[in-house]
Image (cartoon, rainbow over all chains, first blue to last red):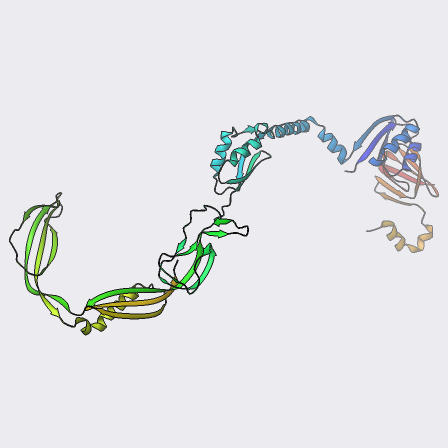
Length: 373
Length: 86
């Protein structure tokens, strides 16, 4: 639908009028009857046509727009359209005065419930007028949470947006003064030091004892200030793992003679109610004890304790160490190796035997390279 | 785009001298289109008289109206009974 201006004029000298209007441009839909002349011109010619009509003293009976714009104007000006638009605008503007939703973002350590509880304590909950919200007051209240570093409260549409920036804990400078120095867990000679944090007190090649301080929990920065930090370092050393065993030259071995006897004792809840009292006279003996419940399912546990005595004789073995030296040394070596963990590599291994007053002292040593802290 | 008058000129070149400076088309008895329009002389619902370059064309009928009028063309609509050129 083209946008046109329709004129209806009194039917006087219409040929002359049309001739003049025609000079301006195209004329459409010219209708004429005995009383009036009706024609349409493009909308842009409206004023110029009006001037021509006025100049020629023509009485304009009707002048109206036709086309899309005129249709829209006409439609918009209808009450059926105007009233819903007005109602919508009023409804929207009224809704804009309220907060319906609360959104908390950026919180990981602080729970949303905790934040909403603080809002509630500040009388901000449910559907509330925007004008009643004091963003600064809410921000100050939320700032009191320990884990919160920065907080901003924004009203966006019908949502109260709470943006929280939580504190980032720097482990290096937090909790100062609570760190213990790193101490050596083993005796050994240091082979490698990889310092990470703290001040290292030892150097490569130094011999350290178990419990000796290796790294202290403090550093001195460029300004000369001493800061307490968590000591961290990887220190490796050749560790000497030793076991000692003492074996006499001559030893005494106890051998069972084959004689034995048993003594029984009955107890209830540990209290003896019957005990065999016959006397036994043995110079050397070894004993074995067995416990048996008299009957299962009893409320009171009645136990029969049987003690068996085995008679033994002493036999002195001369040059016991010399005779079994290889076996004893192997046993000692195996005992030492058991102290080495599976993933540790044995660098060196040796044994020393010292004799003093008939007692042989065997020291078995394994050298492994391992982290000592 | 198809041009009715150009096609006619092309087809009837031998008769070109006899073609008038204005060109007219009539569709049935309800629409009359003229190129070479030069001005309105008379307007009524029963007769539309207008000038062309070398004469006058009169259209007679009933319920006549002008659909469109530009400085060089005119389109007449209505129940056309008679067209006369002098």
